[in-house]
Image (tube, rainbow, N blue to C red; front, side, top):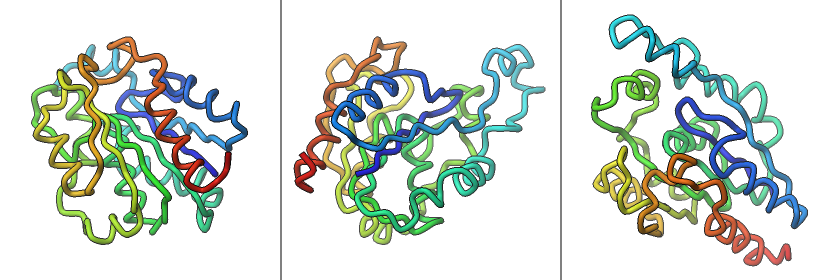
Length: 209
């Protein structure tokens, strides 16, 4: 089985709990990819300010192009693909599945949303091209037959209504983490055994273990 882990805005393939999850999956002999997508320098964006800052690297077009150039050939036609995405990554995964007709075994969506208000301008700047609420969800659910939405009950960035809207549209099983906040390193999530167990459950279903 092949696993692909996707970071979010201003994110890193080496950030949050990605190194932990990659290591745990590799210990049970799984193939894991953790791509680094083009991102802006967050400090530079804040320094420039709302009026001058521009999203040059992180936008939907660039991320789709990066995926097409660096990952698509490694994944297209493969069976038993599992994607795991955090924050902005879940809606990006929907774009990927929609654009490239990827058939996935399962997706673990962590702290997901389809869109968010403009409250945090620095995140809205780099996120806005990804926002989409009118996907063909019937198509997506056929290509993603099993999915989970994992979220913190007290997420400071993503209101529950956006998380539940995402989960409802994708018929995802929801799992609430009390005190989990945005389920990132800021909330001290440098490991994430629950997500590992969800991934491992797919292996057990397919009798990989």
